[in-house]
Length: 253
Image: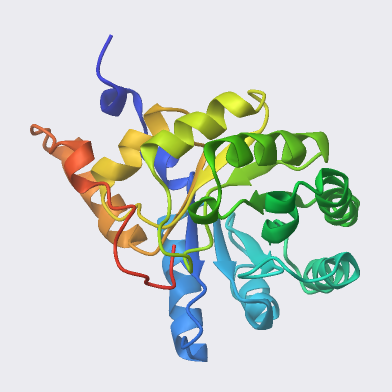
């Protein structure tokens, strides 16, 4: 049997990527260019700010790229009613994937019933429209025990993915956290890595340990390199050398 890389097709890799367009300073033309890039590379989705959902939906209407957006972003401290309202408005505007920030303070405080019921309320609104929910734990602020318990609450609430980070905390995805998250949920729950996956080797490393989605801004560079390697196989760089989960705060995935 060949290596993990040898077994992957372009679609296998591209369809794990959520192209991130969440920087607060992005202007309209940058969002449009990002959507066009996502369509050109045929990734899984774009993850845009709530204000950009309608525009992204229009631009991607004739593609197989889903429109995603964020809920309770980036701090997770909005009331449940607010998160549900945000979700319904985003779904009305064309979003089919919601990346919701967990109530971080409630999780740390041990208010597990509140955390689970809030997630379930958003999940109910999304699933009624055939949309997916990814719940962001923001691991930078959690102990390992809290990360594992957060994953279990996400699954109990019926969400579709657990996700590491917003991109706006001091650190993002780490291999150790991703392994912990993968073993803390059932196989049918996806795991999304965000903030720190900026090279093809880093992407391949997390996919091999069971990650099913990756938030990325370096989409074109990673997928161009994947195609180049497939066309002319060469020894790969060490994935661990390329993995960057503790880079300076960047405000991006």
